[in-house]
Figure (cartoon, helix red, strand yellow):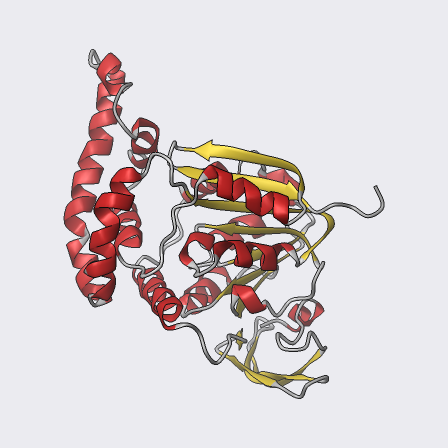
Length: 335
């Protein structure tokens, strides 16, 4: 961690100020070893391999297994690729790169750090990237060369960052993998200043019946219980089918079969997948098969999250006809 991260961190237990005790600093300014102590309640948190380790001691077993599975996945699919920018912009629309310039940004659930890296490159003042599991080690490795990215291991429900500290918070592809998505959403919103914005993207329930009733029973009963390495191997076959289908749709849309291609179920999503390399589609299939927790959120529920959090000027959008994206603003007391 860079010492500047202290401008954002607070004790996750009492919200008290933290003191950094450094025991090793790298040439690039990261404190690689040390601890953070709370002046209020006296709790202490380790800084190890450049990352403040502020996760709670106990996590519900199913949530812990979900976090562990995704940590394994991001260690396997750890690359940052050019196509991530267009993919991310689709998930956070109508927000654009320039809207992050000069902002203090919180990413709630950073995975391997691909989105924090993008927001940092778009000119954010600082990005605090949090995740509960071992994915933080991959995120730190992928963003270490960006002085405006700070990685913290922490729980969304007990975020060790000051309330109202951020201009923007976003959570992409994470809230549907926690035990109580709406509660986690509220916790993240509480870290946004008045007038700031909250951005989220989640799996939709609408149009995903084939996953909910077909894939989910297999995930719950079988694949989420298998070793991660076994799921990586098993997911190759359905990934190959999806890869071929996406290429088939793209080819059909460009030829004499265009009228047929335009009627294909999941056409919009398959068209996007056709731009991805096979390993990325493999990663997506793996994500659907490996976690013990996966919620598919109806639009009505997603809209309620924003309303009950008191957000204003809310925009909810249908993405690829299988997921929901939303942006809302914390009321500005001065307006």
